[in-house]
Length: 88
Image: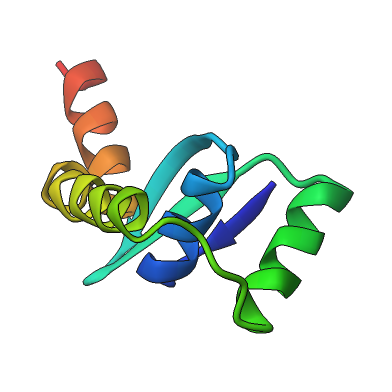
């Protein structure tokens, strides 16, 4: 899998047709997870080279990702909740 905490790269990848398969949080940083493919690697390189995409679609994806961030739970918090449920 490919993980990035770069919000704008994640929005670009989503606009380019790559589906976010998960998220994780470590402290205040949220990581967006994608399936790793050679096409995804090429899309990341395109982003870094300044590739153009439709502005309205990009802005919409950024907004969706920003709304997703507060719902992401810290990794340690997930483990703590799992432990508490199994404890007597």
